Image 1: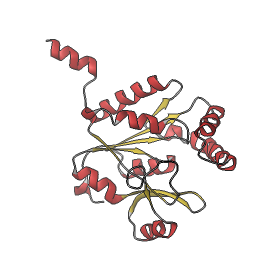
Image 2: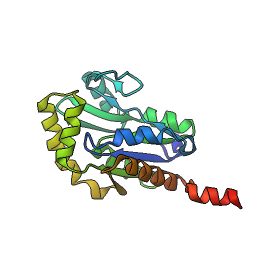
Image 3: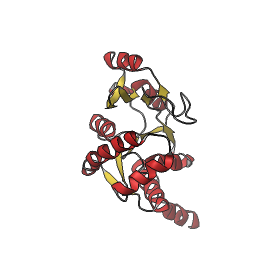
Length: 206
């Protein structure tokens, strides 16, 4: 991606699975004033539940994913588990920037940090911290979408991911979801230069 292709801001939310980052991202997309568009990641895993191609993820075969890697088509990618790839296609970000949007990501910790390194000035990287690893395990079990072995793999990975939190611009502690949502809104609004609601109300009252 060339310098001339840069558009809006990049807003990254990363966390171990089950931390609540997806819920927070969906919440932020409800606010038109933030001018956000969701970056759909590509993955080589199978769809879960009611997930749809081109809505939740771009579902690719492992071979197709590897072909994109060879062609340099990804802004970032990672083999999260063996033959289980996730990544952000450059064309996805270019598409959303061409629409004049700020791009919001719900991605893996390693991927989030890679994008931050590539676009340090344009990116706000937020780490969503769960109350505890035990709470993470409870949330993942409650989803009922994965086997016990897969959940244990995610929990082992979570311990490593939690250690990366200080590398992010800011950390949101998701101990109370409503508080975390408000904190996320305030962070994003401030980063894109939107005045806080209190200031807007003051100005209108003048």
